[in-house]
Length: 495
Ligand code: NAD
Image (cartoon, rainbow, N blue to C red; front, top):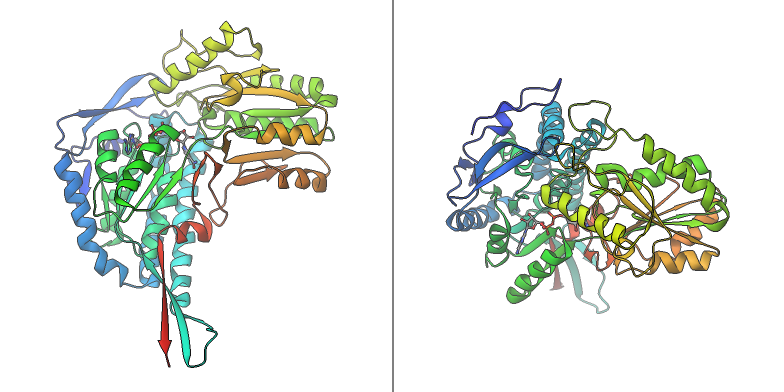
């Protein structure tokens, strides 16, 4: 299908979206042989703007073989050589910045400023792991003192082997960079399976590979749906599976990995709290709360979707927050000044619609929004805020993955901490209050992998990303992201 879809005022996207070959194996592009066409949909209009064929089971197997064949050469190249390739990936992403921004807006519905952040985040991740790849060389064979005369020890950090990387649709390129960059840095080879909803942006990594001179087979890409993901998980050639996505799929991935006794990293869902203390600056807090739930139309694993606000300021604060929500410019790629776009997929739009219908049926107190937008093309939802949501209600407990905020108030810090931790998840949290020490003490008591105090959700490549409880297993980013692809080898030597 040839498409002339474009984003108003944006660059020509035809090279990125009119692809007859979307499967990247052993350094070459191939047409998908599954026979099933995947649509790329513009959530601003709801229209299909491109179609492509998914990888067949044979192609998944070929990709696994290519990653296995390339492994030996890649692992022995040395970290500083691998770093050069990673830097080339970062440069390649930045060189395509305008196209990638436009593509994210077209396929994900992201406002311009969000799409810009994504491209820079992905590039910065490659640069960061290039540095860590060099450092790793310096740590190889580091001495370990042993408590016996005549013996010495050394530690080496080896790549686990070929790895399968499976990613979702909410931050394409970014979730991939968080896996691919550390995996390649350590010396693993990889097969990437993008989300079936946002494949096109991920294919750019396949374009970058030959441009960077990456040896064939080090990176392979197999587009497709759950069947392709499942085939990767059960392929004995992968020594690790790194997955980001829903808890339901994550459980399947873990079960498949358990059958082969291979390690998994799981980055799963969240229902994160944001605590606004009684000394908070109301205007600043309203900005932080709004960004925590409306950024990316709420499609963030880290969305702070449960607001806990101190009784004393609850009324004033809620008024300010509702005003923020009502003033948001909700728009697709037809406007450059949009602050919140549509949801990315029709399925997600329907799912959020079900949550909102349930909230209406249960007569929850809705302060603003409350509906998906049925009379407008595309997958738009009104920014929505519910107050005094019962603690056993799905709006309070379940991950909605949309711009839907649930509020409760608290009278003591103990109550705030209890409510914050009263969830199956533990991915992220935010605390807002003018007394930084007090806010930090509360943050210390919250069970979450990443906590912001008095700042919107900024994530740096050298920080840890991952969840407590049902939000996942393992950590991405930082040195922990590198360790996730390392096998530690200890050697004891008779001197
Ligand atoms: P999903 O679980 O539906 O899909 C994720 C990926 O898994 C897709 O590529 C999909 O094709 C693939 N898949 C589906 N079935 C599979 C199977 N049986 N075996 C292997 N792979 C399979 O998730 P989604 O809807 O794409 O993403 C939304 C979810 O991702 C949310 O729950 C969100 O919280 C989570 N997420 C978590 C993080 C994090 O860092 N913790 C980041 C982004 C998104």
